[in-house]
Length: 61
Image 1 (cartoon, rainbow, N blue to C red):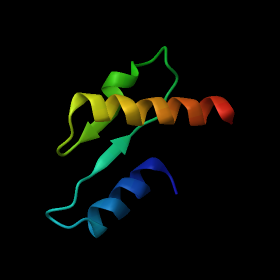
Image 2 (cartoon, helix red, strand yellow):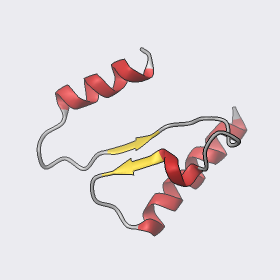
Image 3 (cartoon, one colour):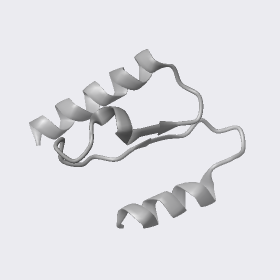
Image 4 (cartoon, rainbow, N blue to C red):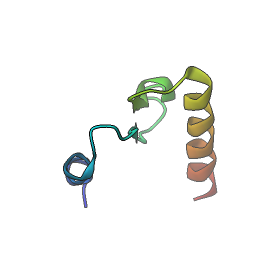
C-alpha cells in the first residue's frame, strides 16, 4: 500500500476514542523529525522517544 492508502485504512478503522500516532519517514534534509509526528494526545517526551526508535530502525535497515 502507498502512504495515502495506509492513512485511509487507518481512518476507516479508527474509533473515536483511539489514540493515533502518525510517523512519516522522509529524508532528514527535507523536514526535521519534529515535523513528522502527528498525534492525538501525547506529550513531547513520549513523541521524542518514538522518533528515536524510528530513527534507529531506519539506520538498521
